[in-house]
Amino acid sequence: MRRAWALPISIFALVWASTASAQGDPAAAAELFRQGRAALGQKDYATACPKFAESQRLDPKVGTLINLAQCEEATGKLASALRHWVDAQALAHSLGDGREAFVVHQHDAILPRVPHLLVRLTPAAPADTRITVDGSEVAPSDIGAPIAVDVGPHVILAESAGRADGRFDVSTSEGETAEVPVEPGAPLPSAPATSAAPASTTSTNLGPGNASLESSGGAVPAAGAASSSTQRWVAYGLGGLGIVGLGLGAAWGVQAINAKNEPGCQNGVCNSEAAAQVQRDGHDAGDRSTIAFIAGGALVAAGVVLWFTAPRGGDQSTGQAALSIDTSRTGVTCALRAAW
Image (cartoon, rainbow, N blue to C red; front, side):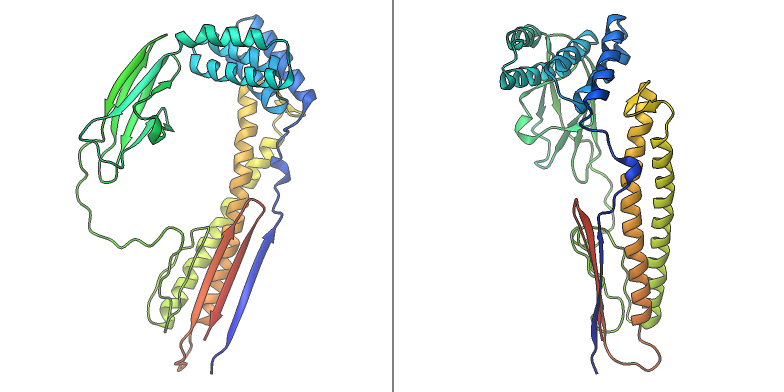
């Protein structure tokens, strides 16, 4: 006898209200701009620049970009200032803003002062070498081409599979182009060969016959054996991981709620960079909480189904069980199917 059934689990509109961002808030943007101008007048650039950046995010304006570029230029962040002069020129042109000529003049004046890094691979560098500058990956097409950077120290890493990271420290000054040949470090000690499953789909025996656990769009732990006892142990493991995920989701949720109630921020306006950072961290915690709740619930459901589908006693029939998870920006769909 053969029976088949499916347990679909659909999760839609999982919204963490306490982490909603205040994008598109002209009033808050105007207040931040006022605070930035006051700090800029006192040459308090550490306060002024973040105020202008947040104001621009909430309500893009040509004037805000001009002040942000001038603030960054005063602190030696010439590459950042150059990017914002470019953005200001494009916005002014699209709006027919009379300040476009001023923006073009400022852009042309700062351009020769911007330092550049010319990163090139040595002949010994493997073909799969990956380059990062200050944590940002350099596109393969940009390797060997000048990269605009701010004045000051920079860290270049060259990474390749099976090799230690090659680290190169360089400091740049105004108008300088520093050429840096790079390659990964020495080969790493050989590790025992292990079979790796594809990142997008994993399949492992879970019980008699062809039982398998599959995942897509999310990592779902799996283990296999040829006995019902092993399948039950896998169910225990999945359930335990699911409970851990739910616990993490609750902890991050509390952090997100506390961040929303940060006393240093009112109506999207924060009185300090520290308070603003607390709210940004809270937003990230809210996202992590949502993901943890989704993954935890799916793992608990998988554990329950595997437990009840494990053969018992003299049941000699073969069975199959599969769990798939599909994630998107609007929701998460999980499907668990079993047959025996």
